[in-house]
Image (cartoon, rainbow, N blue to C red; front, side, top):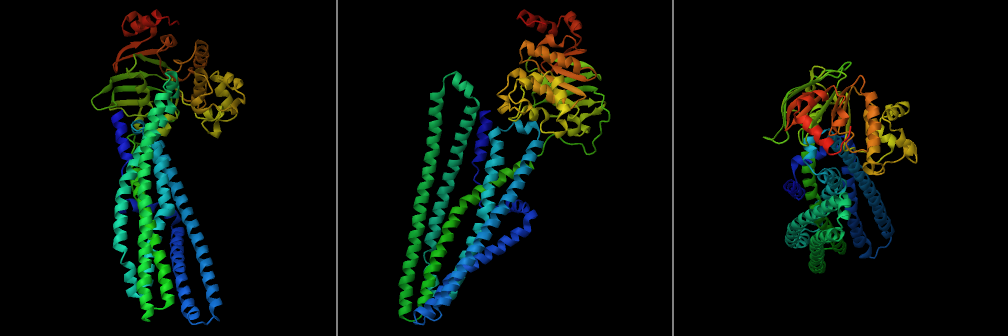
Length: 597
């Protein structure tokens, strides 16, 4: 388990390329629904940059034609023109930024919904092999990183490049000699940017790894808070958490140090460029080969020239993280479930509920057989119990029947149809499942029984609760059906959660009931109430139940005894007792330990 977790931590530290054409193409494909808005955003970007580049030219005109000549008649027009340019630039920049953010949010909304939908349809083999935090990071963290790139990073990069190119062209047109003087510091700037980029790239990788360790430790220990408190390990846990946080802090401080050096270095080099412009430009003015307005324009353009360079350096990490996030997200999108839907599914019309296992073999890991040559049948309306020691493969059989996993070999049929030839949705609708470890969502009682299906409200909900003997749970709750149950049903007892789980299984009126240790974690009184409900509900339904308490399966039509993945005995309770085999030994051990019928 630890090795597996380590691999996922390494996956989270993937740096990624700054530019990956394939990934970028897939990202852009999500923009097709808003492609016309993207075109409009690009047009606004070009217009905004063009307008913002116009400002210094207006100032140049005013200086050369008004201030230096002493003609103040047209100065007012120049001032109002400059104000107009600024206002127009403000409006265009606002529209462009708003539209870009809107596009980014629309695209990310679509991606997040599609990713969650895809996750819901993946098989348990994939879900169980990944830590919950890893899956959550894909839907939240990585999608959030892509959101930052699509909303600001990508557009800002193109905007900065367009601004740089535009300024260079304008400077060369104004005076190519002075423009070359401005570009003298560019090699130094590129060297600083490269050095900064390399060091920050490594540092941010360390930051991501340190943050992953902090989040993983915190999630694990909050989930297991009862164990921490029971064994009085709060102080030791805090020390370990403190150490992880120190590592995270130190990594972040290193990144801050690089930023603290980088931006002043760029500022120094840009100031150096301005000093060179003043020196060379002043000499040119003296020699009458440059106007004062052109010098002022050069100074303004030089300041604007270095701003996008700083921004591009900062956006480098955003683009790099986004490419790594995109790689992980699209890898998840490309993951295909091992549970295949049939090309032409066979329909279950008026299902009778006959189940048959035919020479079924299964292994979770290659070479480790969990089930071996399992063959038995359940007739419509029969109650068949599966018993055996822990790890014998009892719950695995139910998972195979529901196609959470597929058998390695052999065949499982429902009403004579191979379950692999039935639509997964249609198959699972035939079953009502109650497990020992009940999962309740942090909603109301009604929401947990109906699972949000409006067809199950009202009379149908009430009937399901009554049939499961669960109305006592509703009556004892402060707000009845609208009472919240807390996260994972924390406000309810184990018995109450079991009763609601049975209600949830029954509200669909399934043709087959699957009970996986449904009464193993409840008290005697609750077990009696559950048994009363089940006796009524099993009538006319096929029931397959897994049980440790042999007292609950005395009246089963058939008992299948599993031992190390193989069926060892099959028969009724009395027949298996007379056989004096595995079942008889389990029975005698339970009653010898005080388990009563």
